[in-house]
Image 1 (cartoon, rainbow, N blue to C red):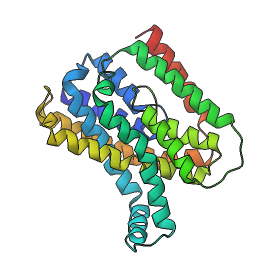
Image 2 (cartoon, rainbow, N blue to C red):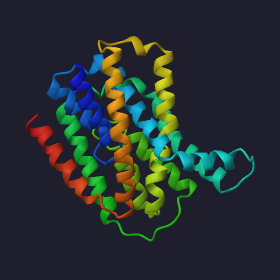
Image 3 (tube, helix red, strand yellow):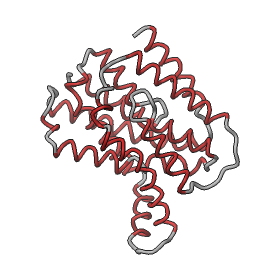
Image 4 (cartoon, helix red, strand yellow):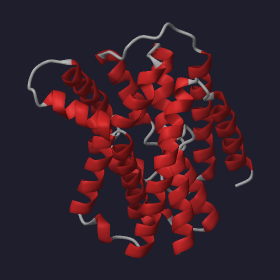
Length: 259
């Protein structure tokens, strides 16, 4: 992977991490088109995902500060309850990371038929969330766990994490104003934890990608992620996700029948 390819893939990651079109699926397609060996660039994928987490921290810095302030009052208040819901939502992906990590990593092998099929699944989920009309209500603990299961499923390349979690919340009847924020905050600890574990295990030195290339990709992912995160919040509030369903369906078919 050269510097230009890293920047392009970083931009793709940053934009598609927050838009409901599967960042992992786009990265796999990008690696396929550039002829990049996915198995030798695992840490690049980890780095650009970490960069988008940083962009989430920047966009939601006030909300995070408020949650932490309420949490450290050490009493059951609105902020503590919200943090507990976030923790509940992380349980499924935590189980997946502990028991199925190796199996999940084997899916990132450049198989375009598989990635395309999963993009079609994302398209169906987004369409279902769009057409499912229910009375909007606040996210409760059960909702948080179900949305967490959607996030765990979205570790599969081609399944959009934000698309899966937000559309699941819509089908549950949760408030659109809350869904985008909850969806983006619930991924922070799992991704940061996964990155730290990989660095601690020595994966940082594996592969053939240079540190400069990884840094360039991470920086481009961070900048593009800042823009996409704010945009996606607005789109969810306006229920404008059907277009992304159509996009995922077209891209999925292209991946299956052309790539």
